[in-house]
Length: 261
Image 1 (cartoon, rainbow, N blue to C red):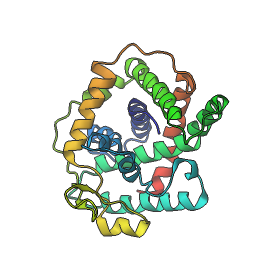
Image 2 (image 1 turned 135 degrees about the vertical axis):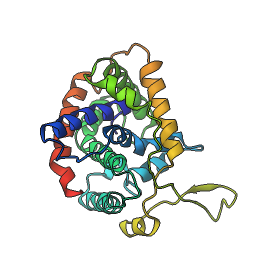
Image 3 (image 1 turned 90 degrees about the vertical axis):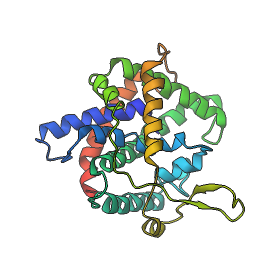
Image 4 (image 1 turned 180 degrees about the horizontal axis):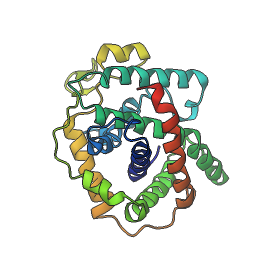
């Protein structure tokens, strides 16, 4: 999936597109909340006891492993989950539409990333005898994505304004995640995994808490901006390719977002 600052770069491009339409594309009340929404799905990583299945859940990927993401049946389920999430969250006037619209564009950015950049990366890493089932693969991937994010934070036009968004202390109207205990671990709380599109209706698609969103944006600001090291050169996913992807992702969202809103 795309890096945090990469998501902010796509946000910048989407705001440019929206400006060219006179605001009719995104119909935002607060662009800052839209920017924060573009970080929201990854906010789950700030949860105590975080495990990767939690992130799969906030990205509508329960039961859809990386290596089977593009299977027709999985894409159909994935898109159905986005659509149901959109119908509920964007139409509830008590919620922050701009934030949840950003949430959806984050998911669409990751969709095109999984369809383009990921297979390119896997083809390159295969030379080392590694597959998407090897932990070492994700060490290489994380390294490259971080170096790209460090450089984007320094160089990408408009990123200073994105960093300023991370200082926002507004109380975004977010529907708090429900926690339910499991039978085998009654003393612990964990999120409720969705196993099918119909389950999303039953649990109202609650994903992260406002505190997790606040914690995650503080982490992004510190790690990728305020305390970011001088970036090294990525190996398998290059900075040039990342710049191409940012443009591709914005155009992909321009074409496909109307399907959900």
